[in-house]
Length: 245
Ligand SMILES: Nc1ncnc2c1ncn2[C@@H]1O[C@H](COP(=O)(O)OP(=O)(O)OP(=O)(O)O)[C@@H](O)[C@H]1O
Ligand SMILES: [Mg+2]
Image 1 (cartoon, helix red, strand yellow):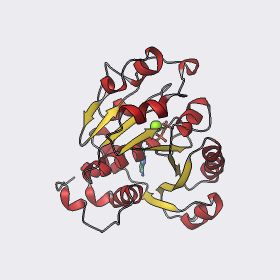
Image 2 (spheres, rainbow, N blue to C red):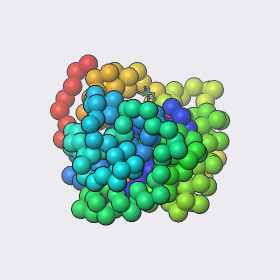
Image 3 (cartoon, rainbow, N blue to C red):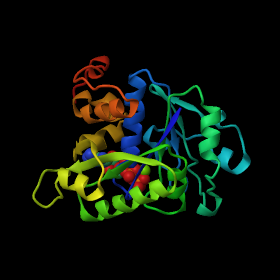
């Protein structure tokens, strides 16, 4: 079992990446849990249209069993955070890595959706991660945060494996993808266009990999990298139903 943290600046696309990576790995027949470690302003449950009764908060605060908070979604198991008020003083993620690994030792991956930036919650997610993927928008601010996150990941004992560039528009005013890689000194694992279909898939509570397979190729590439398998175009997409929007 490997834990993979999805980190980055606020609003960069961490939750979108975490959901689609988890579902793409599920389509590769990997056993996956997708865990919401963004506890103060959590979004994972709402992306699936779920109002959860059992959450990771019950585990962090009361020591309840993690497996009681598993919510089957598509082809993986989500563990949501509570939608209620939850102050950062209650966020204690120091034991979460060990507990996730022990509880889900028969799983292949735990994908961890992190809080933004480098506050206490995000540092907790880094500490819970074996590997870290940094989601970056092609802006200087987003890249500045990514450089700090890479160093913080190493300090927390995690291995930063690469970057997902999200919401690029291929215009002169954005930082080119290869420059982002040079500046952060990490490889680009996926490069995803800005596309309003992400908002449509969100409104439909349907991850992009199920909503539009043609727009999901980079998520399948990312999943293949994470799983250590070779990506072949069309292989996973052939598993998916066709959609017309
Ligand atoms: N490639 C894209 N094109 C268009 N919209 C996108 C794209 N990726 C994400 N979005 C939208 O941007 C918004 C923010 O994305 P998301 O919630 O994944 O970011 P986040 O990094 O998890 O944010 P937070 O820091 O608040 O947790 C969402 O409404 C999402 O649907
Ligand atoms: Mg998020």
